[in-house]
Image (tube, rainbow, N blue to C red; front, side, top):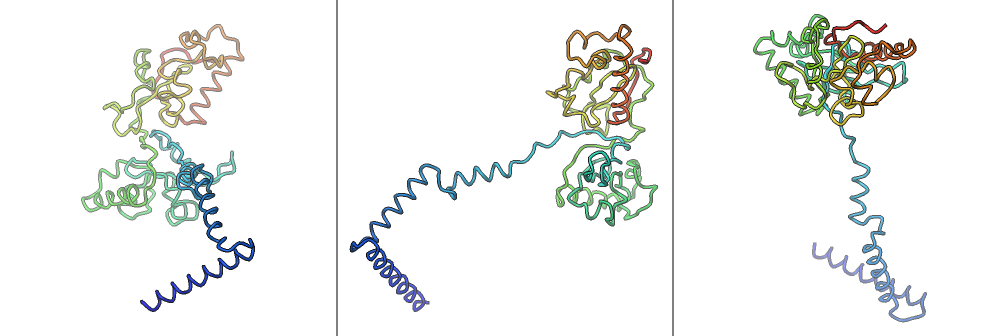
Length: 311
């Protein structure tokens, strides 16, 4: 080892001497290599102080921070069975892009898009994509009867419940699949035929962050929007829009039939719920909004306002 070190020192010394001779030959001055080294050090120092070095520590870290800056995730939301089925990893006919792959385990919805090879189209577990599959995973079964049935998880035996917990832990902590929200079974949704008063409607205005106790299994507090004679819960996918500080939070907790028909944010239109004086074309706009809420967005109808439907 000492012999190797000695040889290294001799090699470096020889190289330094040869470099010195080369510098003297170029400049015509004896000992010019020292001046050259001083100039290089000074230049590097100036670049370092002025953040001009491409490898300068702070600049590099700033660049990395900018490149690796993560998008702010959407707040938790609620899913209906029908909404969840959309996220099966197939190609979206409207955009020609692949849809994310979501699945629910005991009511918790995970984004398993990073496991598309397993859960996406053509994967060995593709049957679970867009479905509640907790009981099926716990029992290692592909039985269709176990899918989309959150209550089946409650009826598992002790051993299978342990297996269910293992799957939950694997998805959340080992695979680190993002949690998107909660699946609310149809039988846990409020009746679409119940009458909702304006006072009750106003309680769900997007300002409440914690889920009320009566909404067991929800991932986000309900947000109600009235349109026509229907009340929609837009917490099923519309939290960023109608939730706290969202661009349409003004509509939350209100009957916005007139505002929708007129495409208006005018406070007067938000407070006035009467549409009887509007022309037919405006009523059509309102009905188009109602169709969008119910069909395209899939927001569940959770009650009625007790008035005639807009025609």
